[in-house]
Image (cartoon, rainbow, N blue to C red):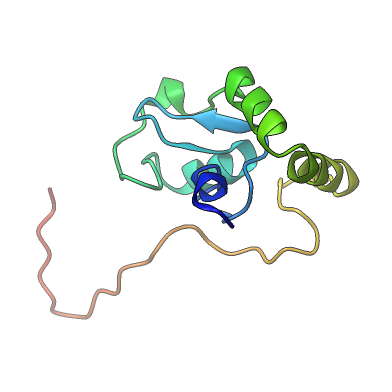
Length: 116
């Protein structure tokens, strides 16, 4: 993938962005990818900046969506067709592996932790 195309790759699913949304920090992701991520943690997946609760369900950026369509209409059409063919209640595309988007910290007995 060229550097121009990788700029428009969702850093969560590592694919060409579909229904792109942008957080207040400026990072953009696929709408469904971001929704799944924000269900677990209200932080930007890229820079870890806190996402205000009212910004936790951003709308699709029409300008960015149109730009992606013009930049690579074949890939954009493929992502649209894939989304239309595999609707699911959870938003996870059929055929793609589902994985948690968070890390659990291990805490051992008698291990002290500072709570901030």
